[in-house]
Length: 308
Image 1 (tube, one colour):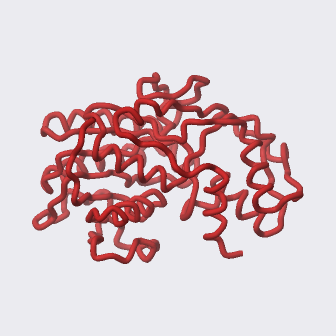
Image 2 (tube, helix red, strand yellow; image 1 turned 180 degrees about the vertical axis):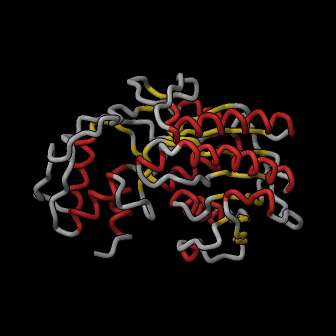
């Protein structure tokens, strides 16, 4: 197993839900963080209060203007991505294409700061809709501009890293849930609605999905930094899947037993993803990562963060 000594990392998109969890994981492990955030980020206060955290403000498009002198780090974890809020934004071809150039600027910044490994956060959207069990080698047929540009960003950043002698690890993250995730995501919506004593309006729940708690996503990314094999792509998920209805019922049974559930009251979107199942055995074999937070425990932790 590869073992990289990591004492300081750069995290772009540090105030995203995954970014916050990743900063917390780094602080817990005594790893310094250079957190790159937008100048107007309303989530700045959510970052851990620690001497290990250094904040750098920059728009995603301006990474080439970040003054790198004095910023020395071992690894760069690239989470930042613009235009992710809603289907229209995710299919805005010009806006999504800007993310490709921004990712390449992130690689250049990684080089200027002395990073030896670059880890990128891709998405299950790179695969498109498929009934296959997802691995890093599963064929990609993205259907949205978001998925297409994630795939392209991964490929081009890998090429640039090769040219610069930087190890490159790409990840494709499945459905994450937990604190600081948007309440429009299906699990957060269901938790919030049940805690309010209301009936969630849901699909019939035939989709087969894999959900992973956000702190486990952070652990997986940090494992990729330490031990991920260069030029590999890893799927990040819990590694087990079941029909979405069973997840909904588990949330109800934990938070509001007996509450009426609006199964079948929300129609499927035309592009609904009906199957998200992954095999994380290669990730585990290469890095030692094993998820630690089961779904029921994750729901209890998430519910504890809500004020109703």
